Image (cartoon, rainbow, N blue to C red; front, side, top):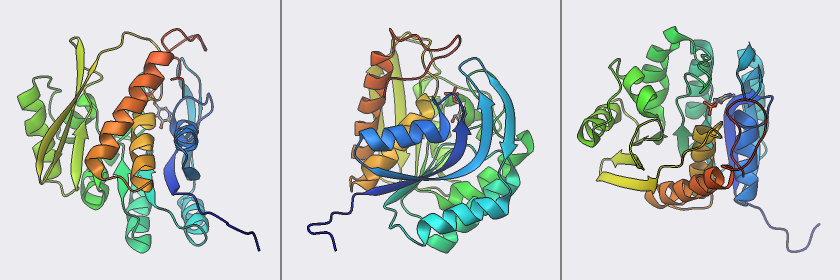
Length: 266
Ligand code: PLP
């Protein structure tokens, strides 16, 4: 028996692997670790990719995805979870069922659809399953401007009132809160907008001009999950995670890794 044994906060990521280490499961586990949270993972898909693009996707058979989730949750007490790349509707339905079985809350959903390189990470016909099966079961949805528009089957908007209107309509799909990220917009300031039943909050940061943005969305949702696992409420978790990602982006502006969109500096 170990004296003075301590149990750290535990976060689980259910997401895809990025062989180049900048996004997906690898970004999530690095983020959990540097924020002092123990990270576990269930891998939905392997990708063969680098900073330039995605060369191939190999999805996990759903029975084996279920086995990974069960192995983690039968043993570890998970304090918060996140969902990233899901690849197809069958995997979406499997993860939705796992949320019910294990009451996986709080849970953050980053609705990964298309990589920065333009490669699809979610089948186009899986968006309905995302809206109907998964979004109503999560505590926070974190789309960027393009994903928010895709989920609503509309054109992307940038005007802050139009973004707020989209966030409110996404909230009506049944999730606990929506954070629309403005990183893909224009202007000197990057604005993220959080809407929940209590109201709306804006998070602003000076926009950084950098090519090294690979894995930004994964890192943000992982950082929110880590802060939730440590017991913070949603608004402070989002604020702290924004701060963390901004510094990881800023510190990577001078970094040179690979020939395309390089990773953040965790
Ligand atoms: N690969 C995996 C496995 C991901 O989960 C993601 C994003 O969530 C990406 C690639 C795309 O990352 P980015 O668009 O930041 O390049």
